[in-house]
Length: 97
Image 1 (cartoon, rainbow, N blue to C red):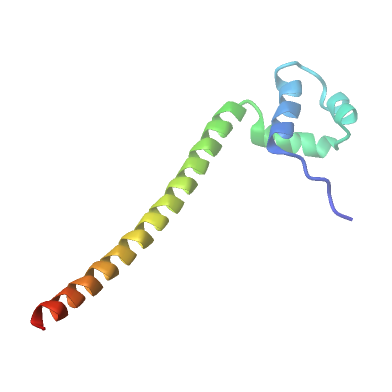
Image 2 (image 1 turned 60 degrees about the horizontal axis):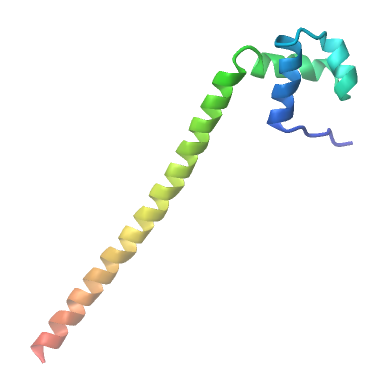
């Protein structure tokens, strides 16, 4: 039996009900239909530092996107280098004739 997956935003909002609004973990668990164990785990992960965690996640996402961009640009540069070398050779061939 597979476990139900929850979005990160759902988890953060659930933790905010506990930390910011002062609701009991058991009450929030019943209301949302999750286990208290899950809420304890989420609180440990997203608890008082959830804003910091979101900033870190945003930074990680940006880094991932920038690495993909660097990879794409490097590949484009390599293709252009090969094309330049090819056309340089072709140009020399045409000037000898």
